[in-house]
Figure 1 (cartoon, rainbow, N blue to C red):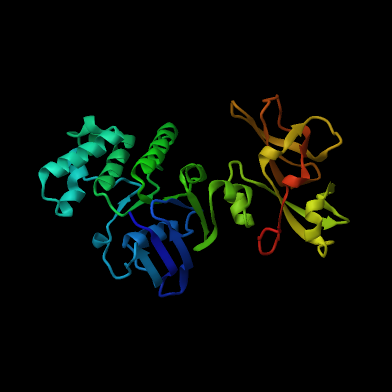
Figure 2 (cartoon, one colour):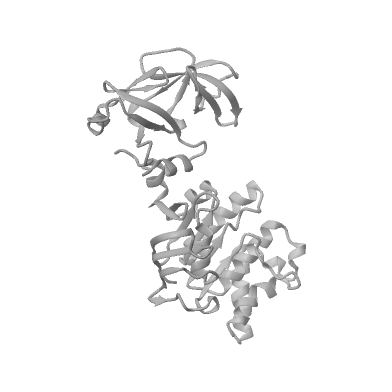
Length: 365
């Protein structure tokens, strides 16, 4: 096991004209499960490939343990990588795939190899498949063999590039739980790339949110979900995403469309010089309560666009009555009967509001 450190790492393409990764600094602790998450093209797989040695940084230093590895080839970095397509050798059995990395590392004792791959196979529940070839395995079984091949090597760092994306929903959920247990058991340093926020939030000790080659925020799942630093992070994490509304601040209140929301006292001190300014308001769907009638609380008048019954909850997509371009998601845990076109009220507590600068996207806090 080892820590990983990226120091002012940059990766440029097209003769240095196009910036891929921009001056990235990141410390990954020994034994940590770190997840890189972000939209397609944000640079997360490039970072993983640079750690593996499959890509070379344009500038900056990359350390594994105390060793600078910029000029060290991939095969000498003592890392193992699991790819999205599993990359198993089709002509080899499961046992041969599991042992391949050990043979490449010149582990000559056959008994040691057999004992190690048998231990790994048992821990992953594939010990009954040792004589099968990849074509005879399901997608989930192939994924476990790919994980097992990497684990058997006992590398310092374990790199996973969207390894669950080819699995169906139920198998992905089961395998994700197994992967978390496996990390707890092995205590190995893992760097995991995904675009799936559920994977990121359930697996990670810490999450790194990336966008356009830059780190937007680093923290635990709770820190990032409940205290996003900017609009990108706020709107990316969460399913459905955080509602972002355009508002104007005036006379200690927010005007959203033609509707007025009182500004909570806790936020007024941040907006002393913001009278008349445009702002972005954020609120999570779970903090909005759909009601049929107007009451005394803080509420917005909406018209339902789409109703999605999900069993344990009903997801409502609505728009402001006086501004149909502003869409809002709500959740109803009581599963009442709603219809498209219904006029409703969304009640919430103003203290659940987030404020963002519409120009920089930074959170006002």
